[in-house]
Amino acid sequence: MNDIEIVVENEIHTPCNSRDEKEEIDEAEMTTEIAMDSNTTKFNDVPTADISHTDTVNTDVFWRLTRGFSIRPRFDSATLNSALGRKIQEIKVTPIEVYEIELYDICRRFYKQESRHKISNKCILYVHHIYRLKSQEIELNEDDSRVTNQSLENLMSCHPRYWGDYSFYKETLALVSILAVKWKIVTLDNYNYRLKGRGLNIKLLDLNEMNSDMFTMETLWWANNIKTHPWVHAVGDELLQVAELLIKISPRILNELISCNQNCDFEAFPSISPFLAVKKPAIVKYTKVKPDFNINVMTYQRLKIKNRIFSLCLKDDESLKLKSIYGMIADFEMAYRKFEQDLMVFIIKTYQLTSKNLEESY
Image (cartoon, rainbow, N blue to C red):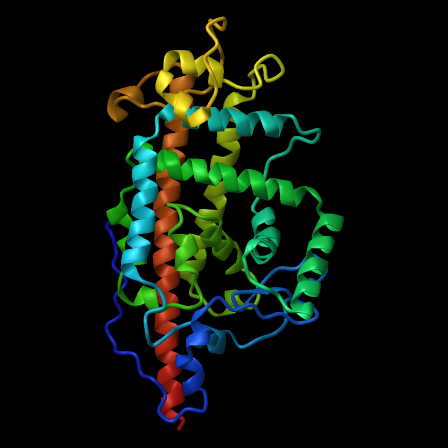
């Protein structure tokens, strides 16, 4: 897929003498907004799914999107570029064995659970906004804190496993980002649309969070949330189709990765760090675990691809598993990038349309 830079041809029309003009340029509006009511949790001024209510509060989507754009850049291009660039460089210099250890540990903790089940996207839809509100260093007022805590209580009461599923999803998605870089599926240039142009003006999206890694729960949350009321009535069919493809592929990769080590003896070997430290002494500075020379052999999923063409042609079980995961991540990356680009274009174009109509009404 060719890289797409977000460019919208028409100039932005700012409403003249609008009663909301001051609100549009207020610096306070350029920070993350948290708005709630007694019935619905909202994150970044976006209606979110709530366990205790079947319908989200009715709201004007286009007006909400208009408020989601700033006439001045909200994000700094150099800062975003530096953050994502550092993340990629860190992945490149870290030995692949460190990530094999991380995968093994994720699998061990998952299969140690009493209830083993495939993880779905529902944990993202219902947990992400609560997770962000609870973890962000933002002081909530009494009403906001009450609604957030009530949403968490509802979640834990109705679907207690979702919070744990979310943690596994988040960890495994980070590993997918790592493999996409290690296997040269992605480069920084693929994601220039996040780092420059009018995308920097968008207030509705948190580009700092989106650029904290190649793939983030933030974007997957949008892909899931955009298919719910009221967003589904505003976005185009193409964006909905890409979102549907993305949320279909993502849990498949997660469950495929977790299944890699399902036949390992986690009771006898709770970690593969001592074994791999013998093979690769350089990983000791990352794991802080000393090598164990008494372990002669271990079963675990290797993640190293020496040559993408020849390695993926091998027919042994381990190579076939890697080939399957490689293909899934490649498909996921294309859908993920397409969705992010289309979402940003949609927000920009909607702002232009509503601003022009508002201007003409005065």
